Image (cartoon, rainbow, N blue to C red; front, top):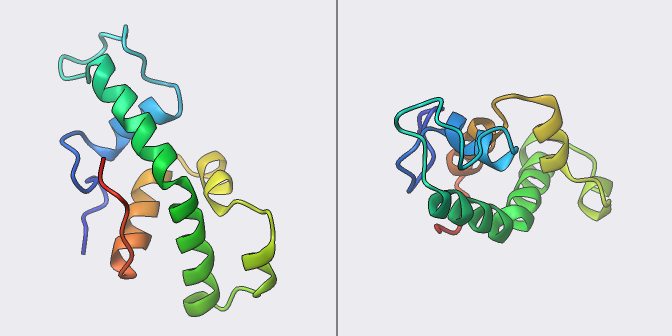
Length: 109
């Protein structure tokens, strides 16, 4: 099991990474002495963009296979990832826990 606060292959907490991805943490923010550098933030954005379709597809397929969601969800244009991002402050932790604990993976970056 992957602990909630960790993101696989990353040195920062999920809270910091999701803050960067959500545009809350910026390169010029000095709120914390261990804030990531601008290059690290750019790599996280590229990593996330490279994994967006994989994340959404995994959420949908595991939802249908294990949670009994309707198969129409697989064919719909609805993004479960986008819904999670707006409805949960801990969206990145939840996604990682869900994906890795269900046997899935994300491409490291």
